[in-house]
Structures are given as C-alpha cells and as structure tokens.
Amino acid sequence: MSHRFFYIASLLLLNSWNTAQAAGPVNGRPTPPKLFVLLVVDQFRADYLMRFESRFLPATGKSGLGGFRALVDRGAYYPLAEHETLQCMTGPGHASLMTGSHPYANGIPVNNWYDQTLKRPFYCVEDASVPGVGGDPTKPRAGTSPKTLLGTTVSDEWKNAGFPGKVVSIALKDRAAILMAGHRADLALWHDPVSFQWMSSKRYVPSGALPDWVKGMNEELTHEKGEKVTWKADGPGTGFSDESIHPDAKYLWGMESTFPHVYSKGERRSIYSPYGLEITTRLALRALDAEKLGQTKGTDFLLVSLSAHDYMAHGFGPNSREMEEMTVAEDREISKLLNAIEKKIGLGNTIIALSADHGGGHAPEYIEKYGLPGGRIDEGKLRDELNAVLTKRFGKLSGDGKWIPFSDDLTFYLNHAALDAKDEKARVEAEELVRSYLQKQPGAAYVVTATDAFLKHVPPGELGRKFLLSYFPGRSGDIVMIPRSGWMSASDYATHMTAYSYDRYVPLILTGRGLKPGRYAQSAKTIDLAPTLSFLLGIVPPSLSEGRVLSEALR
Image (cartoon, rainbow, N blue to C red):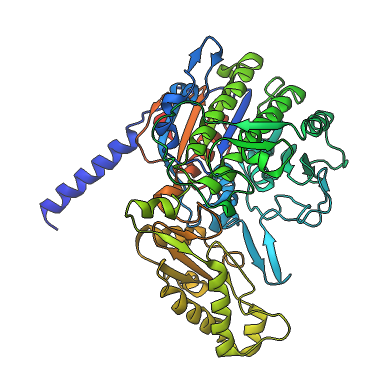
C-alpha cells in the first residue's frame, strides 16, 4: 500500500481519537440527586422553544424561577435532538426516552397494532388481566400495564441495583404514563376523560383504592365541573403564528376555529386546552408533597408528560396561534413546578430533563397555501379499495371478514389465517398486491412489507435505517406506506406519523448537578437520555439501551 494511504489513515485515526477525547474526563462521580424529574411535552416540535422564546418568563425574577428559560439557561440544551423512529408517535416516543432503545428492541413500534391471535386491534399498553382503578370501569381497554414493553427503564435499573427511591409517573394519556414508568414504578396515573377523573390500574394499586391525595384531586375536579372558561389570545403574540388559516370544524371536538374558545371544565375538550396542562401539573405538585419525593433517603423519580399539547396540535396545527398560547401556558406551568422543587428539595439536589415524544407536521392546507408539496391520504378509503383488490384475487370472505381487517397511520395488517388457508405463498402475494396499489398513490414515497423487513430490503438512506430500527415482527404492519414529505392522513387537521424532520426533531435539555450548561450543536438522540442519566446515577443503563452518554455536557 502507498505511503499516501497510511498518511490519510493516520489522519483519520487521529481525528477520530481527538473527537472522542474532546469532551475530556469527568471530574469524579457526581453524587446522585435527591430527585430526577422528566418533563415530556407531547408533540413538541424542536422550534417551539426558539419561535416563542420572547414570550417566556425570565429565567429568574421577582416571582422566582421561570419555566423554559430557567431550564435552558441552567441546562445542557440540545435544540435538535432526534428520534430515530420511522413512525413518530406517543407510544414509541415515550418508550424510547426512558429505555434508551428503539422500537425494534423494546416492542412498541406504534400505538395500536392488530393481534392475529385475538383477531382484533390491540392497544400498546393493553392488559386485560390488570383491572383499572378509578375512572370508568366500562371504558375500552380499562386494564393496562407495561406488559408489552420489553427491557427495562432507568428507574427499573435504579431499583434493580437495590437503591431506595419512589417512582411516580403522571400523564393525561395512559400509554404516556405507563411507558415512562416502566415495570417497577410505585404509581402511574392517567386521566379518564369520560368520568373526568384520575385513575390507575391494579398493576400500581393492588389494593384497588387510589391514594387519598389522588382521591382529593378527583373530588376537586368533580366540584369544578361546569365552570365556564373563556380562553383568549391576549396581545399581538410573537408574530410567528399564522392566524389566517382556520381548521375545519370536524377536527375540533366542538371547539371554535378561532379565539376566543369557550368551554366548561369537565367537558372532554377542556383537557385539550391549558386546563389540561394545569390539572396535570397540579397532580404532579400533589405527588411531590404527598409522596415526599426528593425528601427521603435515595433518589426519587417524578415523570410528567403534558399530553394536552398534543391534543391541541392535532386540531390546530403547529403554525396556529393556539399552539403559541399553549406553549406559553406550558412555560407558566413548568415555572410552578420548578419553584416548588426549589422550595422543597432545591434544584441543586435535582436533575431535570425536558424533551418530547415526537414533533409534528404542518397541516397540508397550510403548506399548500405557500406552494409547498403536500396533501392528504384518505386511509379508510384506501383500506376499502385494497380489500376490493384482494377480494378480486382471493375471493370473498364469509360474513364480514376482511382481507385487511385493520389499518392505522398508514400501517396495514393482513388477515393471516384467511391467507394461510389459501396456500403458503398467499401472504407474500397479498403483500405485493397491496404494495403495487399503494405505490401508485400520489402521496406514497415508499411501501415496505414484512417480507422486506425479514430480507432487509428497505428504502435507501435514513428512511430505510429507521424502518429497521422500528420494525417489530408481529406488531408492526404487514405493509407500511411511507408518505412523501408534507403528506399525512385525513384523520386529523395536523398529525405526526413519519421520520421526516418535522416529526423526529425535538428539544432535549438536561439540567442539574454534574451537567454543564450551554447550547450544544453535537448530535443527540433521544435514546441518549437514558444512558446519560444512568451515568449520573451510577447505575447500568437499561437492558436494551443503545444510546451514548452525552459526555460533552458533563462536568
């Protein structure tokens, strides 16, 4: 080999060594905090913290600590952290944050899949063997647990190591609370919109009775029912929101398409507003007091997901004034939580992380207005057309049987039993028929099948890599349609279901002891949170963790 080859190889080796050493050694092992807090804002795009910064409370002021500014100023802030998931949504996003793993490993590729044995759709945290506690016992999927989540979370590993500490997880959505909490949490709480009460399951409350402090909160919600609220957008705002486009009423659950929004507390739509944020942080503050989190021996975990942001974003889209006002409201709620922690535990004794389970795309009506490519895909219509194509090839099924019994977020599931009864090649043939039909649709970028996943025949570049990181056999669909950028399903005004930048990029902030404040341009993945936190706690990362320790952010 030439001297030139060795010269170039040496430079590359030296450069990689320098890159690896750039962060330098960490000065000693940091003492584990008294409290770790995870704040997840559901469907929180990476640009929200930058677009609406001028309206946030100051980092510190006469009233104490602010919200987002306090975290950014005190923390290691990665403005463009990245989910490496093909279909960015609530279940996979929350699962990855505390396990440090991708869906192909942790078993949560989507929110809903089709169970071929039960012959019905299956919810990602469904567990019929574990009854619900509180709420409406007759509601669908009242039994829930982390049974389907494979591997461990950071708090699971903390407890596996024998260290003392409580784990409390709170969210309006059950899947958010459960998938953050992991398998050994002391309590996970979520909100039932029918009874308008906080609830749990016997997985966390074996006695079948909610703690008194949760019951007290539920009594307050009952007394508040019927109170009228008028939600206004005061002042001119930042000027970065587009108030000229108004969603169709069919997406808005009875809400007005423009400000002001008038509703009564206790109505389902009331939790889609800042009231949904307020009752979530109110419950978190009760947990802090009642469970004495951060005030006993060991490290306690308080995990909070602000689900209301996602509900509102689906109805109004990320460019609406509504989402600007929701973000400002979150700033105030986070401020309340930070000030309570400072008073009771001290931020110096606390590590706080803020991130999101996914971002969100612009509504097609918004991007089409400005001449950008995009559109809507009517998934229900497509499913009917695909069933007709398969019926033409394989014949009509008896009764109300369907060749494609279920689809969700452009993920299509075949009727395995019916196809296998035809012959051993029927399932592969059905995959190809569906692929051929979907690939002709105007919004289709790629169509990938279960056979493709097995053979590793995937689209080029990042989409193919993310497909393999996300595909879980038996839970992921038989056929996955990857839409073009700017295209989305017709089920919501705006949604998230892709691996494009608007869905996968989110903020990541880590603040507290052992961390170096600053704005970091280095690549950060959301799966890096779990191993970084594990390093700070002095424990082994979660069993399926694949992220890196964000060493450049450590003191």
